[in-house]
Image 1 (spheres, rainbow, N blue to C red):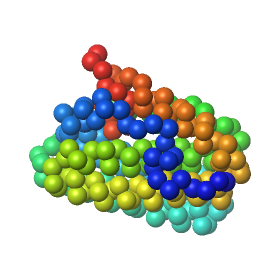
Image 2: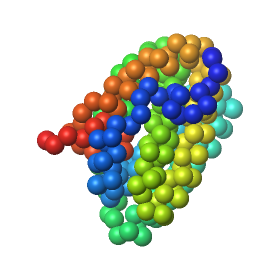
Image 3: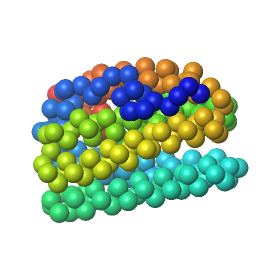
Image 4: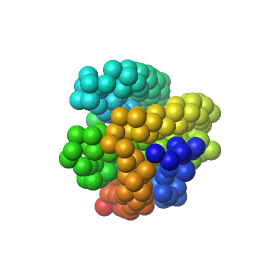
Amino acid sequence: MSATPATAEELLGCPTPQGWLAAARDQQELLLVDHANCEKKAAATALNLMFRYGERQPELQEALSKLAREELRHFEQVTRILRARDITHRPLTAARYAEGLRKRLRKGEQERLTDLLVIGAFIEARSCERFAALIPSLDEELAAFYRGLHAAEARHFKLYLGLAGKYGSGDVAERLPVFREMEAELIGSEDREFRFHSGIPVAA
């Protein structure tokens, strides 16, 4: 694999559109609720990978276990912020983002593992990029919290890419442009609902 991108922006194919940032500023309660749900899903993703692939690779299992614990800590931190702000934590319909990326998953076991890890890297990188873009428009408490998460998500996307290179099918460099194009299309197109990983929200 070629050198790991140094920043989320180097991995991603486009910046977050201004339309999404405007919606995030106007709908911070919804942003926080969906953020909590995303952290929980991120932990579940790491656990699913650990159970499906980790038993054959002890080092992979340990890395994913640590990742799942950190994602759950982030979930707990977001839910504490929700309670402090008297915001009800509730389930929401999922954005089409993750499912859209998974449409290009390959069927071979090692190839599928590579793609799942690369998708994880893009999701974490987009979260990292969005945290940085949001910080200037947030109150002091949320800005400080998102600065800390920005550093964590940067570690996470590099971890996913490193795991893909070590345990995957050996073609990570070839898969990055495939998912970079798909991810940019999902982020740059219109979405009916605002979510943390949605595209540009439009009125129904």
